Length: 419
Image (cartoon, rainbow, N blue to C red; front, side):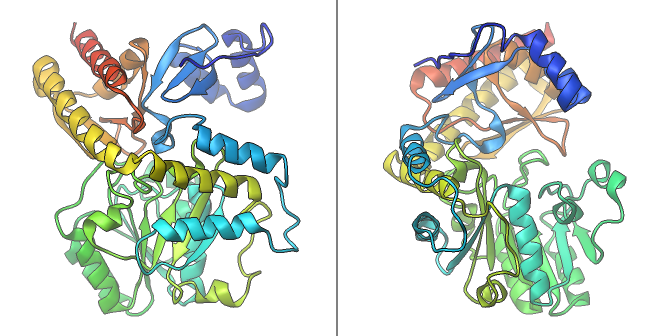
């Protein structure tokens, strides 16, 4: 069903919105919006969003947030119920929704994880993990080249991209970056910092262009962390909660991290929320002192309601299995279209579940495809650390007709960029 809007006439006029962006938000953000046609999104439901001009767009973007689409009834009803009772807690008394959300998340987390700290964004969850490592004396951070963990100061320190880091140096000290997939390079760094390392790694590098590691790499990372006394932090902010066709990429790899980072899909596409999930041993410094790391809105009841609704929806709608099946079909068909229409211009269509990357061999082609897809009625994303890769993160609720909309739009976009 197409989403509807009740905004006042003129309130969503693209020109007026762009002017307000330029005046009050960011000139650069206004220019970016105009580059993508200048339209304004005003409503969303399921896999679709509606613009002020009346267009309906299939949302296969959103950077991985919309696994269950927009405004899933299970999530919306939980959030509305909480709004009508206790949306923001006093934080002095115990509050049940925080406890319930933590129980729900631990119930689907990899076995061995036992404690949860909730935050508002992925970067905040990364910051919590860095502080947890510091509290245990794990002061030397190790992350992967082209990895992405956020842009707050600590998270930026382990986001290994010069263009993001350069304006804000000095960042955190004692940080090493090693090539993703290179266990020997990781071994060398950890050997140089025995007992004081903290490894932060994505199981699949999303912003690097959906880079999958070599077989067995994450198991080797876990083994090296155990051998050298390092804290093993797995950043599943984008890959977790069914996105890659498993509840967690950790499950597919057969690993249990000391700390698991969760976000994006945990929001249910309704209220932002993230989490740091840890073993009882790793969490001990936070267990001991409840004031060592706090935030006013951490674990707020509204977000906790959304998190519980999201986990329930993933279970009830069988979205993990659907993501695996849909992803295999969509990747195969996209690869066929790319080979037929674009030929050598595309190096590879790859991914896991509904995290899909299309790597282009021609400069600027990914951006052109992004724009042409939007013209054809589908929202996709670029990859922040790899301008050559177009990224698709479709919802797992797509029906057969919506899959055809996506494939037809990609075919049209591909033909437009080579015409």
